[in-house]
Length: 260
Image (cartoon, rainbow, N blue to C red; front, side, top):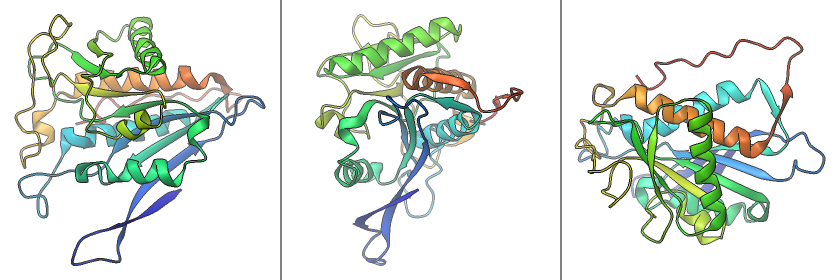
C-alpha cells in the first residue's frame, strides 16, 4: 500500500507529493488480529551533496534492507496480530513521513501495541557488536527493549546494547511521533553516543554520517545483520507466531550479504 501525503517534493516539482510504503501481514487470531505491530525504517538519505550523491549505506539503507529481509522471511508464516512493515520517506526533512503517517492513520493508533524503528545500525568501527536501544520513558517501550534483549540471548546473537530508558533517549527519528501519541516504540541505533555506565563505553560515531562516503565499504555487515535478526525476532514475538503457511515448511535462509 502506498501512503501519499501532502508534502511537496520541492520548489521545482510542487505537485509531486511524498510517499510512504506500507506492507501488511494480516493477523489470523479472531481476538488479536486488530492489534498492530510495526517494524519501520526511513528510506531517504542525505549528504553534503544531497541532490546529486547521497549513498546512505548506513543511514538508512541498513534499515531499508532490514525491512526487506523481514518481508522475505515473514511471508512464509502467520501471526496472531497484524504486522505492518513501513518504509518512511522524509525522515531527513524533520521526520515528515512519520508525522503524516500518525495523522493520516489516526484510527490505527489505539490498535498499535508496539513499534521498532530501525535507523542506521550497520556501522561498528571498533567491532564490539554493541548498539543502542532508545526506549524513552513509556513503560511499554521498556517492555519492547527487554524483549530485544531476550531475543539476543535466546538466539545467541553475540550482541550487547545500551538501553536508554529515560528522557535522554534520542528523538530525531521516526519513533518520535509514536511516543508523542503514547504508543510504545523503540529506536535501534548503532553506538553513536556515550552513555555513562552503560555497556558500549565510548561513542563509536560513524565519521561518514550524512556524507558521500556513507557507502557499503564503510559499514560492518556482520554486526548489522545480527541486529536485523534481533529486530525480526522481536517483532515476531510481539505478533505471536502461528503455524507456517505451508504444509511442508520451506527453507528460509536469510542472505548474510543483505547489507553488503
